[in-house]
Length: 633
Image (cartoon, rainbow, N blue to C red; front, side, top):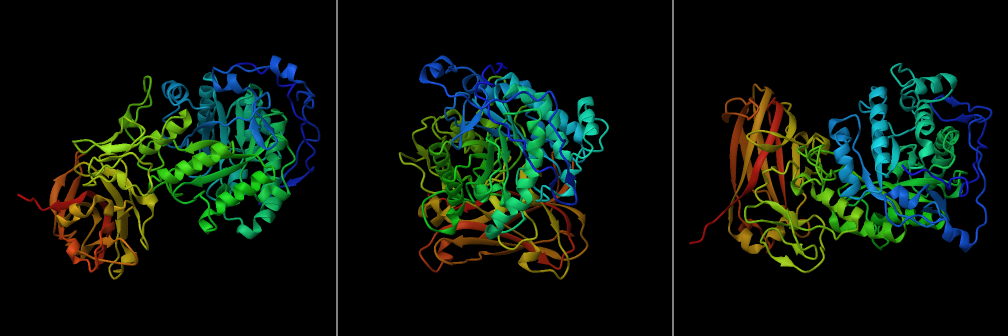
């Protein structure tokens, strides 16, 4: 890591004049030390310099991100390099470091690829506190955080330490404030800092320890609360900020500033860091503070218009107009659930907006899982050579990589064997269902260009399937598991007498199936699907699958029909590749667009698995979802 020789010359006035006692909620009182430790470095105001001195104090145009930009600062509401020039950092966020599909990336080989092939400026380390995270395993998580800091530092990248507040949504909840305080297997320096400051909260000790150890490097940024939420509505956002969130952030900033006088600190706002303009009337009095922006392209639009769907952009604009510095520390190409889409067109609009406004970003996420926002798959290697091969990077991952590198947005088509492949010529868009290539930008979002029939889930993703309407499961319950091969998997719990659709499982494609064309649909005669079940218990009743090819246009609705599944006496007994005994039901349902009363094509396909007085409890898999086409001689 290049030493920061200009730190004092371009330093800032350090504001430590916080209230002597900060109330941070849930009965916890943070009492700062009366004076900073004697080791706190002196801080000088930035001197006036002429153009000659600026020219002499240059940074190289090539090299690692830290070599090019040095110690960061905020100048006129804009993240800037050590010389005060605006900079936009682009990079990736990890998934939760408590999970294998989160910390898998913490290897030398993976970080080499992120630094050299992906050309990331910055990496964000997502430190979940709850969800079996830091509160339960503080020593393990802290070790992974330090590993991530060191891997990024060795490659000259910046790194964000993200205190991942999500559930509960109040960062002053006792679970956050007490996290890590009673652990005795922490590093000696951590324990010494905690014991010397018995009034400090969990996040104060956590950030204090890391700032003390790594703050001198100049490449560490601190995100003190990821996504506060549920604290109030839009009308209450200013009050919530001033009474709850600002005092909380200030209590953490006070500690960080004792060890890192200049480091960038990023503060979250209510409503999952979307009320980004909440601090405009009462900003934190620190020159190097920024405010988090989080968005998902399938949920939050950034286009022009007065519709409510554009409200997030209006708040970002408001924050920028009032001089707040904004950092998009989390965003994705999916909906806010992490799934749906990918919404490439809307994501591109966001990328252009961030670029035009100089807003830095880290994309969500480097998860190794079957989720649309995930950049990687379960089979992606932790030990790549020079780059991850194409079949180990998702559609989202290729999009993130392209925008980090400044490349053309990647586009896709299906090859002659039916596999989704990148189009070699980045200037065209592939229309995957028929191989035609149109020299036009994409103009739809729930991308028909990615339709693949049948849905066989061999991509290890949900291939656009999501929950729909009233249903007893959430997208979090959907995953990819092994039946005869990879298949869409979810839990099934059915209660006799609870026989409404809302008591069952209702799933839908997110694709516009009408994009397959009238010629295709006029040849369709039958819908097909393989359903597998593994009963934990089943003694009575049936399950019913209703097939709903929804016509496009207006409020049209069409149910092709229902087929029964007998979990007690039916099905073909098969053995899965991992040795489990499953029951297989190969279901067909006649369907023709001639059944429609209008000249319409299917828009999306809904499958409803509901109860006919069954008491089935177990797992369900869907696989090989498709249609039978009439063969013309």
